[in-house]
Amino acid sequence: MKALVYYRSVVRYLLAKGLSRFWPRTFCARVAPLKLQEIEFSPPGPGWVVLRPRLCGICGSDLRLLKGAESFLLEPYASLPAVLGHEVVGEVVEAPPGSEWRPSDRVVVEPILPCAVRGVPPCRYCAAGAYNLCENFLEGDLAPGVILGFTRGVGGGMAEMMAAHPSRLVRVPDNVPDEVAVLTDSLASALQPVLDNFPADRDTVVIYGAGIIGQHLLRLLRVLGSKARVLMVARYRFQEELALEGGADVIMSNPSRALLGEAVGARLVDTTLGGGNLEGGADLFFDCVGSKSSLQEGLLTLKGRGTYVMVGTAGTLGPVDFSSLWFRELKLTGSAMYAHGVCQGQTVRTYEKAVELLARGDYPCRGLVSHLFPLADYRQAFKTAFDKRRHQSLKVVLDLRN
Image (cartoon, rainbow, N blue to C red; front, side, top):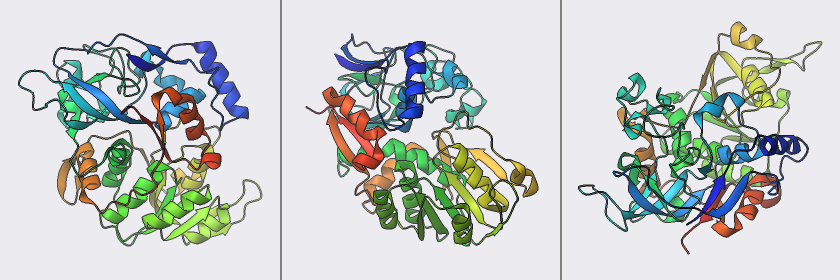
């Protein structure tokens, strides 16, 4: 079968890392250790469901890998070579006897590979339902890895065939087209931090970054009934238009510290060095960028005992002034993937809840999937995803239906 394989090459990884510093919006296809090639398909185990991928989204983690921007400290939690792709809408081809799945069933694949998938007894986090924090990602029957698409021998969605553990599948309702179902993974990634940090109606919330995760965060707050005042920081005009449609109260494009502070009810306090501090501010700051500047502005934009949530993946961020963390007793937390959460008083599996929200009919999806490309055109797909400004790209998807 044909599959898009990312293989291990320290030299190519570092070369891509160096080139991305000069051309951050350019996909250097000749440098990236990535090949569309023929490989043999083999399920990881006899109890796995064989799938034919229909659509597979390109995730920000895929782009970070190709840019050489992933944290070196996370290297043990992946294994190569690996077939890329974890935002999968697929069709069941073959299921083990006694399974609830049948050929032609449409499913989305929750890509996490915790204890239950690895054939080991549940760790303390898996036993509590927080399998995104599994302590056995390096153990068991599978190669080391947190999710499929970055794990050797497990396969991924950017291929003509793949397999998934039955416990990781969620059925796609008939009224949800593939082009909507492919949003499930990014929606679940935004839903988890919303469920874990749901604002009070009187709160002021900043969503910093208006890519696909930021757009989902905004829509989720509104669909789940939040009346909080929501300010979204965008970089491009097309993102601003989508944020307006999603229900933002205030939309700002690359604001200065003073303007951002004014928008959240803070005032700029002059400093001789350092660009000024802010007094007062927001209650909740969702950082969907994960950069040095977004972290710094988040720390300064929050009022006393406010909460900063790192949603965007980040590695080394460079020097950041953390004095506000101490001075204002801020809460800093991260949000990694998805598992379970409390939604309107009920404990839910986040991935299943994401599918339910997409099936309701009132979730504003228009414009979120911006591009579709056949697998053979993967180079152009990644180029489009890399350069959001030129292509006005949000969620770029590989189409394997033909």
